[in-house]
Length: 636
Image 1: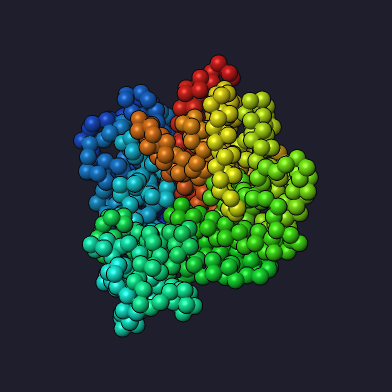
Image 2: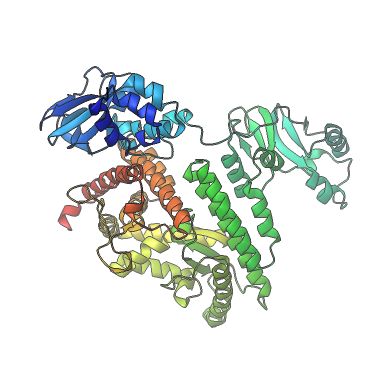
């Protein structure tokens, strides 16, 4: 005899995650045991501090509000949304209340069924873990609703629930020698042990390293005698890491420090006992798709076309990492390192083509998303150039030189795949190729005489990263920005107004706000409506602390959480939301072969719509904080 009620429940659940990933027999077994509840407006499904039920809930019809402190609404669950998982997961009483805010029908699903049918299904289990993470900001606050994912899924303290990153196999018995050891003896030991490096230790702590390259470049060339002690040719200090290093973290560390070996110590610092060594070869063995070889190809490249091929390979590498569920933060660091290496090589090639050496010191700046280390997809290039001050008589010829260099660089970047900026925000534009003093004056004018255009320029040019040249020029720029802001603090209020101009992109009935006209009509602009409010908020708040760097949005929120522990829940929520949005945009861009900015909501699943919606609460929270902190009610 057919169970018609179970069949109706099946017809509903089969279209929603995680149930849409289950086999028919599994889902039907769940549906046969579902309890159906009817709730009028104001009825509680559960209350704060109530003993947990042995079920979790799915909204069939209507809407259920999740409340804290009695009547403070923190989220709404509508058709297909899951709630009540957090108490089950933590085996605790409810920390929030769930109450019908519309006439509602709610399905109650047994926790035993959750264990039996869902946790054994990789895709379903992943979604559930993301769901009970709830909108990550509410998990940290003790929330109980469901719907959003983040890269860390269940939060910073529960990373071990998901295996996103493969750990590198570390050599636990590194070959070592003492500081007074002759180079000859160290070389013989390396030959006998068949290793390419030897660590110099003092009291079991690493103080230096010698590699095969050192023997070739420093001994074979006659620079040092083999009778000299190892301290004469060792590289010091060494870069140390903790032993639970992942492939992604190890790659980033080596790329950033331009080295091929890492020393592993007990606590990750050079002041603790050496326990292992990790080489670039070890990483290659651990994972064949290693970005290190791309960096080497960049260094060997002799043309922009060759660099274009390498950038396309990094595109494939990025897709593989995302498919492997490597957290997007690590992916962005790796891709940013490759992009930076490509830019540096392009500048080197362009300098070699110039008839003369640079007339003075300079620094090449990446701006916007690349300056923040958040440019995963191929987008427009935004860059600038600052050169050291020269006497007035030399200004014209100096600027002409750097404009010619900048044109060569931007043309090569375009060949690689970074399109010319339509607004000409590039170093090849005379407006953005200036001396240090000219840049200082420009920034001071933007800060002390703000208007709409100057604020817009500030949000682009103040997110910069020096990728080539003299770092002291950039340090002086940063100091001048902070000095100008300190003398004209109302500039922060203008930045604050800009940071709240795009409110959370949901309409009255929780529908997405999409473009109303133009080429992108009916599409959702994930950059302008969801990501940039978080980027703008992080920049504003870190500036208000008298800090320019870091420029990366996630790192800015992490620093803010450190400086303001009373608001860490909000900042951590912004971090999780930004990671989700960055991953989502990147995946969409890869799938659509574009920038991923404009999304056809009809083409994405219910699960992905839930993920996006879950991020908007973080936008609302941070904008409310900004409104109060900068007293914007008086300015609006």
